[in-house]
Structures are given as C-alpha cells and as structure tokens.
Length: 467
Image (cartoon, rainbow, N blue to C red; front, side, top):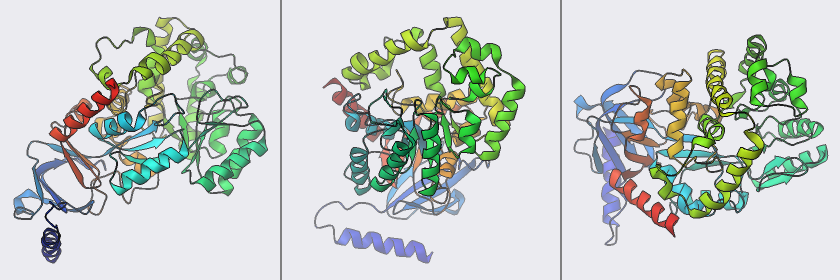
C-alpha cells in the first residue's frame, strides 16, 4: 500500500507541474484480464496488471479490487488475453537502398502487429543506431532493436549492407571494426572462404561478441556449431549435414531433389544432438521458406496487406528477388518443392524434440511477400504446423528471444518488475495460435496504443506507401 500511495503522489505532482499541458499519465491499469505469461504456466484469468514507469508494477487477482481507484489509464481487460510483446528475430530494416521508406513503413507496421522487438540481421549500422536512439527517447515509434550492422560475405557480396571478406585478416578486421562501432553481434552470409570463417569465429570469441547467420557454404553445420555460431538461419546446413552427400553439397552441387532423396535420419539425429548440446539456436524463417519455394503460387491480387507496401518494393526489389528465385534457385519442379516444404516442418519437429532451441523470424522485407509485422504471426502458425504447441510457438517470439539475447531478467514473460512490452488480444492464442492477430491494444515500454490508435498508425503507413 505504501508503494501505491507513493505512485499517487507522483501522479499528483506531475499534474501540478503540467504548465497547462496534459501531462503523461504515469500509470496503466489493465483490469480483469487473462494473463498468458509465456513461462509455460497455465493462463491466469481475472488478473489486474498495473504498469508504472514502463515496468510491470503488480499482478494481482481482480477480486482484490486492486487499482480500482488508482489514477491513470484504466483498460477493461474482461474477455481479453495479455501476452508478452513479440519479437521478430530476423529482419532487415535498412537494406542499402533496396527497401526505401523503412522508417515510415516497417517501424509502425511492427508496432501495429504487436512486434515490440526485432533483431536486425544486416543493415546500415549508423542509420539503425540513430533510429534506436529516437525510439528510446520517444520521438520515433518503433520496436526495440538489436543490430548487426553490415553482413560479412565473400569476396563479391551479393547483397547491400555487406562487407567483402577475402582473407582471415579481412574477417578479423571486420569483427574488430563492427565491435568498435557498437554492433551488437556479427552476421555471416554464405560465401565467406573457409579459413576466414574460423578466423571470424576466433576473433568474435576474443572480443566477446556473438556471431550468427548463414552456415557458410564452405563449412559444415557441425563445424559452425562447434566453432560457436550462436544461431543458424533458414535451416542452411541442416539438410546438408543430414545427408551422406554432405561433401558433395559443400562443393555446391545441391538441390532439393537431392536433399529429399539422400536425407538420412540417423545422420540427422546425430547432428541434432550436437546442436542441442551446443545450444545452437535455429531461426528457420519458415514463412519465407514456404513463400520462396512456392513463389509460383504467390500474388498480390487478393492480399489486403499489399496496400502497406511501397511500389518500389513490389516493382523493383521484390521483382529482382522473385526473378532470381524463379531462374536460379527453384530449379526443382513445384511438386518436389511442395514436398520439401513439408519435409522442413518434419525436420523442425525432429530438432525440437531433440532439444534444439528455436526463434521466430521472418526475413522481412527481403523475403518476397513477407510483410513487416504481419508475417511474424504467420511464422507462429508455421511452428504449430510443425508440431509445436501454441505455447511453444508463442515462446519462439517471447521467452526464447529474451533468453537468446540475455534479457530474460527484463523481457520475454509477464512478471512483476519486467519491462512492460505487452499485447492485449481479443481471443486466446492457446486455443488457436491465429488469435495472436486479434490485437486489441499494444503496450511498448509502458506506452499504450489502443485499437483505434493502431488503426490510425496503419492508415498512416498506407498513405506513406501510396506516396
């Protein structure tokens, strides 16, 4: 009670010094809500959640009447469900000049979809760091960010926001430079020479910075895991390492027909046990894997989300990717690719049962038709299709990212003292994971956006996209 009285005094003082302007309300109270805290515990109905100064101040039974007379913003949570804010653990927000208007398009789309945190896996470091400062200061709406800066790739990088790596010395130099510039981690691409990969791993270990990304074409997944790579993206290296043709695949002679025909469950089991032992996280970007493999069947014609996408993304960058996928990567027939997409789900399930940890990520927006914010919800549905329970799928975007990032003391679950990144839903995601899309409100660092606020945000994105 003393704490409550103190908060009331704080609120009164803020009102007194408002100088004629409406002061920010320091307290948010959500009444009679069902809390799904993402720890794995059962849902907690009829709870009152009090948020003060960006943190969860209290969670109590609504029967106690807690917060009923407390000054602040009161939200009726009856019939609604509160989950932690979601993380998309594979995005590219400033990908050279390939996706202009990221600030006006991607950032608000994340928030409007309840994505309160992102791991940027390759972009312009200075720009992203400036955005992060503006978001932290409250002058820009956007998610929390962890940032790699430019990706490390081979002598001739394929993508913007990349650093060319020809030699081990190049790799060591790049790690040191990025660490000095404030990058949070190092992102690897596919074409790095073998000796440079291990130099990067060694330098990252010496400088206490993690490295993640593609398993480079020159090394085995088992070698990357043993070298300390913290996460693998897109299931790269997994099918190669599950086949007796791995040596052949390392030379570049691989396709999905060979992956399917040579898949060896015994070799796969051995690899998965190693990944689990080394705690090598997987971010399989399943929605992108499905979309890329089945791009023949994709179209904007019936997709209501297309209105949020600038013409340049559709007509230039996504067209470039689509053409490349159709002519260079999708060399197998459509039926084979459909079987491969299904096999990926089976492999993800097998890794999950083996104890390999997973993260939800989408590769938006370079993933063609992968929409910032929206597609993260599809990713959760793909995890359920792979055999995860709805709670396990939810954890890939809440608890697991917090654990991966070493932020579990602050984020990832709904518990007293944690940062108030929350999503209020109209229906129970544990009954149907698709209910994560039924968003009634979003809270980021204690700041509350109602459904009406989110709709205005989306209207602003639509206008920006059309302009």
